[in-house]
Length: 110
Image (tube, rainbow, N blue to C red; front, side, top):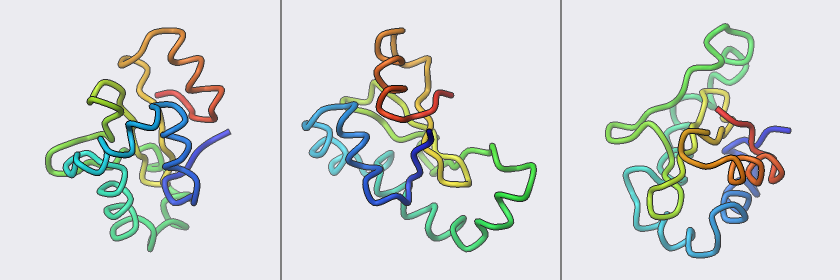
């Protein structure tokens, strides 16, 4: 199962992993927030989604000027956003138990 940034409940799925406090943290974190990555994806990649899906560049990640990932609560977890909109959890920023929990919530692991 995959979770995509453009799905209506994508942010809520991140809140399930990170906890309710993540809502406030993410709003304050303008440089690496869910909203900033969604905005970039909608502007630069959504119009070309069909081409992206057909291309071999599908696995390329989106970067913002100051961040290559959405930061989880307090900046510990990292979520990578691919050009096709899939949100991947970066395994290097968690322990085995955390990765297992994230998988159960539906995120693929990077």
